[in-house]
Image 1 (cartoon, rainbow, N blue to C red):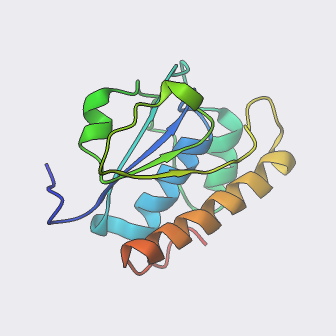
Image 2 (image 1 turned 180 degrees about the vertical axis):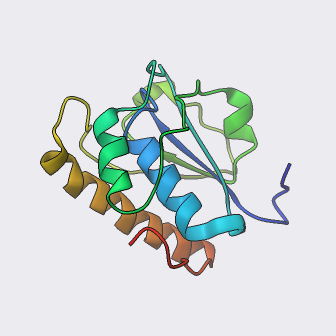
Image 3 (image 1 turned 60 degrees about the vertical axis):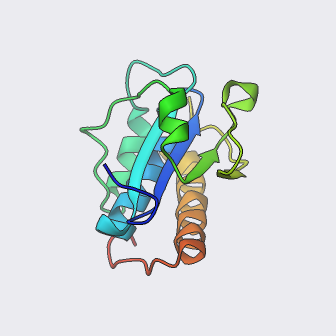
Length: 143
């Protein structure tokens, strides 16, 4: 397990952990490699990842097919240096000393691929900004 002095740990959280948080985690893994430890979770996880999110991420070379929605735990929040929430509201636990950001993004649930692509692209833009804030140079993947 990483420590705060080694690599930063980032936790992405949305309600179902099936779309936005999974796309963000996928981009961060692809762009940061081993420079960041990546987690994602949901306050009420779905049974599976949104297939449209999987489809649009595959279009940019990020494979989410092996991912599964995970339940948000207090331990996951405590073990993370940065917590990015995406519409989970009061269901997300807050701990002093953590860096928090709330990314207001449309929920891709029920949308088709043309409607999800702009959400995907905005998530990628924000992940690149997060990497910059963490002092990590993005890799070549996930263009």
